[in-house]
Length: 282
Image 1 (cartoon, rainbow, N blue to C red):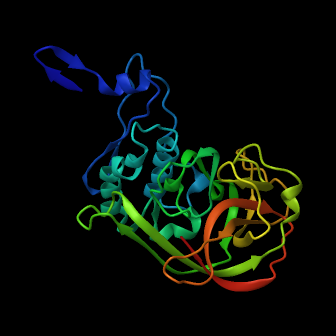
Image 2 (image 1 turned 180 degrees about the vertical axis):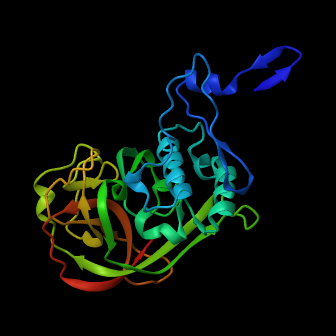
């Protein structure tokens, strides 16, 4: 609330009335939840954690809520997407004691790689590595939130990002490199008979932007999981799903081999990898 000679402005109420959610970050990781104003909407995005997701740290789940909300926003300058959230990132890094990687966190990287985006647009100028949701403009969802349990299939060998300015590590980046060791196949999963209409569907695939599947694409399994509905009912009792990335070969200017870019994702109950490979994603 702002008090001044011209009266006061209830910023929490103002944000709620315009469709924005509000949350207060306090020192030491404390989250201050502002009380609703008399004309505020019912803000439900940041409810207290339920037993549904107690397996993950609360502060990390809160970060995901911020990401999902932030990814729906529009920027006047699309290049500002990383810089505009840098202050909030600084707060989370201090609380989580983690390493920030252009929209993702190192300690939770294998969970955060399972992001999906619906109706995305690619900015005119590359602003983030393809493995980060920051590379696109569109509503982000995380597949792990639909899982009863989640078991990684890949090992992260390294992950680095290069900021434009060393003095602003949470702001714009010139690029990033992710190296994974895991199962891959050049054969399209059986789910490719249909395309997903929404990131919340359980079986199918999605292309990050308006592209076509290419015969040179490869498919890398990232995790196995047992999916649940929002009501926590198992979708297919005892049936495991494999969530993975659709990767496309990239001509690397640094002479690195096996370099790819993420172009989409897949989720299927039937997938047989052909080999184990070390893949570099930029």
